[in-house]
Every structure is written in C-alpha cells, then in structure tokens.
Image (cartoon, rainbow, N blue to C red; front, side, top):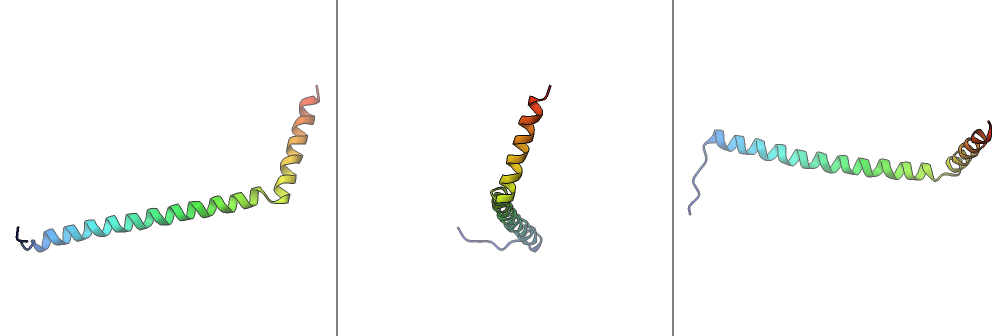
Length: 69
C-alpha cells in the first residue's frame, strides 16, 4: 500500500495532536515525580525525633484529657 502525501492542513492537525499528547505525558511524569518527592519529604519529617516527641506529647495530653470528668 503506497503512502499518499497528506494535505498540509491535515498534517498540521496531526502534528498538533501529537505535540499535545507528548506534552501531556511529560506533564504527567513530572507531576508523579513531584508527588513522590513530596511523599519522601513528608516521610522524613514524620519520623524526625521532634515529630515523634510531639506525637507522644499529643497522645499523652489526649489520654489525660479523657481521664478528667
């Protein structure tokens, strides 16, 4: 089956669609990487000694508050 040349308007339309598709994929990859980075940072902050101490203090205060009539 021989290839037939496309109308320039049709080729421009296809090129624009391909460009949108490629840019969308790049954006989705970038967003996924940023999300992963934020999760890693949050994980590091959540396990810091200060964060653990604060969580223990909140739990202790909550238990003491529950004991009061």
